[in-house]
Length: 639
Image (tube, rainbow, N blue to C red; front, top):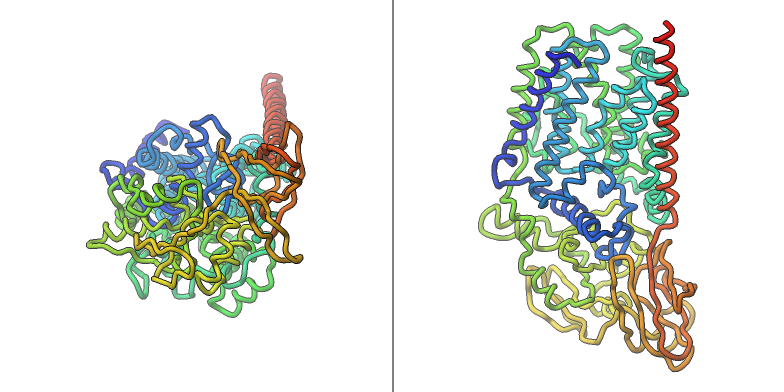
């Protein structure tokens, strides 16, 4: 990068600071949607485990317990997440956003300059990437933003397999597989569409860089693939789910500017998938770049853009619906709106190609236009919001003890908080423990929402509870999952449960003694649930380890109200014991007469292999790069 490019980089940093200034220089913070209900809990739980010196293998607080490390979207292995492990969450969050935005501008500028575009055109492309609608809306999804940061770096390092592999691994660690797949797809398209050797390596080296990068992420890849295989996502999503949040044909005007919305004001927090604008100036440059390109290029790029445009429409048109019904791979993609990530690299290149022919001042107009659109586009709240427990959490912490709560499925229909004023309504909605908001407070829940990959046996049990018509029908199942409190949206007949009044939700308490594990009193006919007897002592050592202890007067079956998953093992007297799973979920085993202690431990068998794969791939690619570097240096010396 030349000296004058350094000044351009500082200008991009200034733009990033201006864009984020509503939160960088105040006690306000972004909070809407996934930021509160998913991102904050994931980051907080991982940080707590790491500060205790534990690898965060298991999340005991959601869906009866499920893997945490294997969850792609936590960003656990992403280097930027280190901020959350060393700083209080609000400050880590702000620093994280600033770092991502700076990297976006930096990589974009280097990409366009490395591909031979003039400084002003490169700046225009970097501005479109940094301040465009996709970057603005993805503030809500820290994992998707971290994945997109490296989009320009794929093309920047397309000629260096080792650096390409590093970028691929970092983008994968960002934590959004769909966005990652879109970037890889766009990269392969531009390479296959006639990418010059000036910009891309040979086919073998490209595959080495892409494949090597994915293998470098083996420490996440292997546990993550296991979680996918154990989830219902492996069967694909329903058409109604996969095509939700799509474009209608009239929505495509929003690539120009958000004020072209037909029915509602610009709200990227609510309509994130349609927030994809690159500005009137940006689209004008892209059109000019498209027109000035060769006929072959227009055919290839036009076909690519048209095909993606159809996919973005989901079920909104008959043709796009046909694609979503018949192209099998689309059934694993949730929401067509995410496919804008695959369109973005081509659009940016067209903007830069058009700007190459335009006057230098146009980048300033684009920067001003996009800043006007994106500045204060997201609602903010005081940063103590993330520490505000609310009355429900306080009551649950007092009354739940070591037991779980069940939030009624009907409660999930609540989408608007109560209170005087907008900020009070925002806080009220957070206090209702939507999504995974119970995680930071160490409250164990049976049912949550928002996790993209839930083990299918856990999901089936939760669906069984939610399908019951009332508390009378739910009541018999509660001891099997150690549920102390049931929370409903509206008052209902208690049907054997104790009414505990209202605290945001209507609360009902299980009157019988509960435990996390039981003696099985007797077995009923095959296919029905066993009768639970005396409760047993359960001591939770840490999130992925607990002890079941008690005394038995004869060989007796034990029921553990804890979700089993591949990687859970049980030990008694230093020897591993085998256990079965009732309903495919709850551990059952037999103990002999006398006092017993059974220790359960969770450890993914694929995790060590994933770590080994990461280390060996990194070492192998490093040796390959070093030998290439030595060879090139020798050729230059011998001249």
